[in-house]
Image (cartoon, rainbow, N blue to C red; front, side):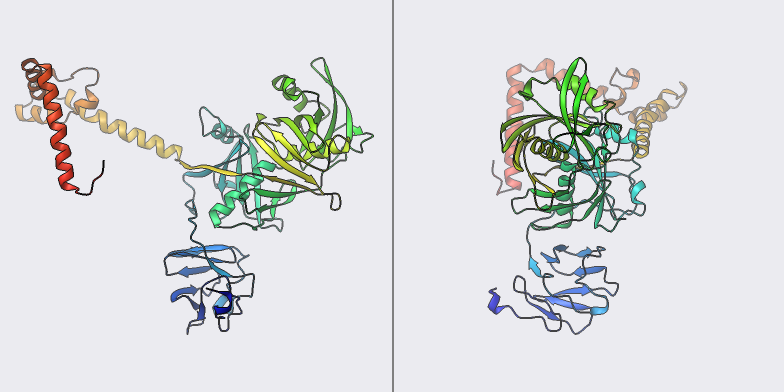
Length: 493
């Protein structure tokens, strides 16, 4: 529909130039979308779409047959049929399929999505609608560590919870490291959270989120190319803010020399809501990260421990770095670390305010804005897979039931008295599942239910040549194939 041909919804105050025709229904709490009825419930919290296809209401997806929208940002829906507010609350078709995880009021299982940003991977959990969000998944440090274990769990660098707000933001993020500790923030993690929320809610490019974290308010934005730009805020450059015992140096940020394991490093520190130490080196690949990373993480100069970054300058707008993350060890990327690295390196006069930083998992674009003092990060966030971890008690019960079902018939047959009637003995023998109970040998050789069948097979093998057996198998396959084509005429091989 061309913009000039788009009708205006009478009484709705809605600009429809990028959406289908809308007109007001005779009932005050319903409207029509191209002849399909949409009911606006009196409580203003639920919109029902009795149509196939999908539409956006203030960038929120309404998919058939029901949309339950409890988000207060959806102010376009007013109680008792009041008018939808004017643009930008537009209604537009969007046929892109949206991946949705089941949302339950009580989480007996653990539904999760795995996302990664430059190889920094996280398990994302949606607790926004849970009755008790903080306790929805029963997370403990031990449980987080088990989930993040790459051999005995799902595997990941951390676990991220999407939670209702409590500090005036739109949503809230909690993140746990692979060892179960809780850091203040994670740049790659919040990009993954933004992509996760967009995928769940059907949001498109231009969408921004006001996310409360332990490091303050962070604002990610979904870009047209699918990457995420994050306003990381201003860096913390005072020692007590990082925190560190290093004193302010000539570059106007905490600086000093640290000695670990007989080696001395000139370092600079910066905070991005969490602590970072940045170490310029000539050749980053020559650094023994496994040796120096944990020593610097736990150095007394950092009372809350620290993330560790070795960085090499390739050009004023191109750096390469390696990461040792606090509580996680060597990782492929660290978003807050890349931001802190650019801030520290620019303060030291070693790079520009805007640069590409190459991490083991890929590049990030970092910009430290000179006017606002805020740091912006552009980078990818990709969905890996979804899954559900069943409740451990349910798994244990299922295993017990399966074991009982297999062993009970065998035990019952073995406990039958020798003087039992022949008919009873035959029924007990028939109850034996030879495929599972007799895997280590026949437990009823005198009355084996499969003895007759095995005798027939043995006779066939002894009285038939190998060539004849091959012909039998070939004829059987051909006859089954012909029968299948007869049942399914359109079948293609």
